[in-house]
Image (tube, rainbow, N blue to C red):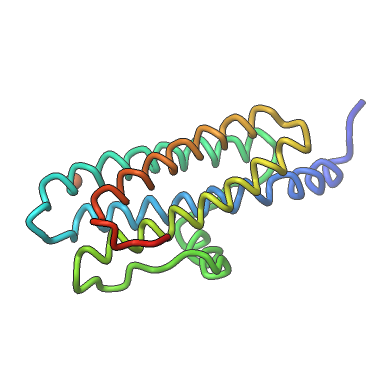
Length: 164
Ligand SMILES: [Fe+2]
C-alpha cells in the first residue's frame, strides 16, 4: 500500500520535532565547546584545551548521527548553520558564551548548558520510548551518557564554582 506523501510528511514532522530540537541543541553545544577550546585562557589551559577538543569532536559526530536519524524517519534535517541559528534563538535554555572575560566562566556556562540539554534529552527519550521507536530512544540514551560524563568532568575542573 502506498501512503500519500502528505500523510507521511505530517506524521514524520510530528515524530521528529523533539529529535530536531536535540540536533539543534547538540550543534550549539558543539560550537560553544569548540569556542572554549580556542579561547580558554588560564594556567590549566593545556589540559582544558584537550578536554574541550575531545568533547567537541564527540558533539560534532553526534550532529551527523542525529541529523541522519531525522532523515531516516522521513523528516528534513537542518539545512545549514543559519537555519540552526534561527532555531536556536527560539530555544530558551541555551546560554550564549558571550565574550568571556574570566575563562572559568566558560566552564560554568558549559555546565549550565549541558545540564539544560540533559533535561531536553530526558524529555525526548520519554517521547521516543512512548512511541515505541527504540532506535531513536537508544541513540538518545547514548547521547545522555555523553552529557552526564561531560557534566562530571566539567564540574571536576570547575573548583565547585558552578551550581547547575
Ligand atoms: Fe584545535
